[in-house]
Structure formats: C-alpha cells, structure tokens
Amino acid sequence: MGFIIEKAFQNGREIIEAAGIRCESLAIIDSLDNCEIKIRQQ
Image (cartoon, rainbow, N blue to C red; front, side, top):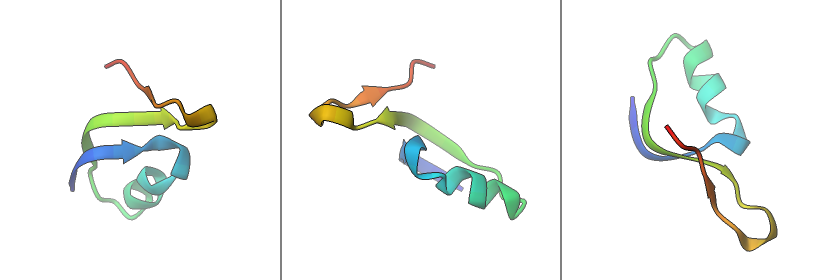
C-alpha cells in the first residue's frame, strides 16, 4: 500500500503491517503538537 502522507502518531502503519501488508509513505508527519507540523527527515 502506498501513501503520500503518513501520520506516524496515529499507529495506522503498525495495524497495516501487522496484517502482512507492506507500507510505503512519501512523507511522514511525527507530530502536530502546538500547531507545528514536524516532518520526519528521511
């Protein structure tokens, strides 16, 4: 499964991978705390 934006703080990836499905994301957001978007550096 491919995603443009992954919200890493919501645990969806773990659920998908636990079902045996490969997951790829172009951008991963680690946090939206204090109205700041924190994007994971790859």
